[in-house]
Structure formats: C-alpha cells, structure tokens
Amino acid sequence: MNHHLLIPLGLVLVTGVLVPWLLARARWTQQVPRLALGVWAACGAGFAAGAALLPAQLVLTGAASHRLSDMMFTLRPPTLDQLLNLDGRERFAFSLSLLVLSVPTAAFVRRLARARRMRTRHAGVLRLVGRYDATLRATVLDDDRPAVYCLPGRSRRVVVSSGAVHTLTPAQLGAALAHERAHISGRHHLLVAAAEAFAAVFPHLPLARHGGSAVPLLLEMAADDRALRRCTRDALATALYALASGRAPQSAFGAGGPSAALRMRRILTPHSAGHPVLYGMLTIAAGGLSMAPLVIACCSFPQ
Image (cartoon, rainbow, N blue to C red):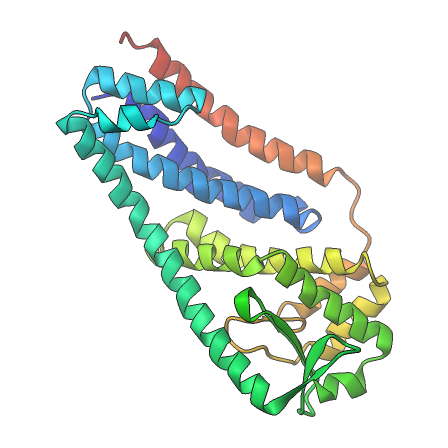
C-alpha cells in the first residue's frame, strides 16, 4: 500500500469524524460562536482536501506520490508549468481529485442558486405589497404578526411586519434590525449553503450530521453578539421573546424562530467561568496532534 495515503486518510478521519465529535459535545462553542464557525469551516475544507487527495495517492507512482506529499507539507500548490507537464498517470490522478471536489462544489452551487431564486421571487412580492421605511431602513409589510427577517445576497433587505413595529419598543426594534443586518454583512447564507451541501452529499458523516444543525444556530448566536455592540442585552432578549413565534420565509434569516429561547437564555445568563477561546484552541490542537502519528509514520517509511 502507498504509505502516502496515511496523510489524506488521517485528514479525512480527523476533520470528518474526530473534531466534529468534539465540537458537538463542547460547551465553549456557544460562548465564542465565531471561533466555532471557523473550526466547522476548516473541517469542511480539510475534509474536502483529504477526500480529493485520497484517490490521487491511490493511483500515483511512489515518486509522484512523494512529490504530492511534499507539496502538502510545505503548502506549495503546483505551478502552471508543473500542471502542463503531467504524465498520463498524474493527469488521471488530478482528474480524480477534481471529480471528487466537484461533487460537494456542485451541491453548494445548487443550494446557492435555489436559495437565490427563492429570495428573488420573495423580493419581487415585497416590492408589490411592502413599503420602504427610510427611518428604519427596512421594508415594512402589513401583517399583524410580529416578525423581523432579512433576505441576504443580491436581494438583500431587512423586512419588518407592521405587527413588530407596533409591538416592539424602539430599543427592541433596533436590536432586531441590528441582528438581521449582522446576517447580511456577515454573508451567513454562504455558510448555511455549505452546511446544507455537505449534509446532502455526505448524510451519514458526523461532520455533515452535526454541522448541519450546529452551524445555523451558531450563526444566529454570532449575529446576536454583533447586535449587542449596538444594543443592550435586555433589549435584544425581550425582542427575541416578542418575535419567538414569528417565522421567516425559506432561505431568509429570522430574528425569532425555534432557537429564540436558547439564545435568550444565553444572552441573559452570564458565561460560566473558564476560557472558551482556550478550550477552542485545545480542540484544534487535539485534532492536529491526532495527525502527528500518521505524519511520523508516513515520513519514517523509505522513499
């Protein structure tokens, strides 16, 4: 067996199984959601890279496999001249890697395109039945049910129901609007599409199974944290309470929804003692250290 398989195989296992398992059980993720989202995104990228390199290492010769491993260790992508001078076996390996990468990439593009079509249709309806409020910098929709949501992407806009305008205080409404604008400026719809794509392509993989539920919740918490730069905790928490029963259209982000109760408790409850960033770094280190035996084993074999 080609011993250079150990590195991509280990990368697949660590990013697809081990680190997601640790993240799903960690308490620090809700205290520092942006760091947790970064780890989830890194796991997705690492798994895709490892899965693409596996078939390449299977078909490459020993010398070519060693060159590919050196590029991985030194983070040096191949130059254009190297790509143009590949032999037949190396071209086949490169094609296999591209084929593996194309599967989640195509799923990601499909998710983005479908969500964009839905948001575009909804934006067209809003232009007909809604009215823009320059003071709120949002579209007001006549509906007695309190709701605040946003359409990210090219059709970006924040939508407020007339029920929310009448129900919420100015401070609460400002907190809800700040939350929605955090979704738009953070381009959170891209991470949602990536999580949905992984869940569709690898439904039984822990990375996809745990990440599919964790990423949307962490995005809501990250938007809450950003909104808290402009409002008080009480204003945001009470706004979430008032909007908890509200529902946003599909492919939109809503300030309320099923996660409102958990987020209210997080906002109003002081964080437990500890160092969540340190715990996050320890989780990342645990994943990196688990790769060390494979790297040592790979390098110990004669070339």
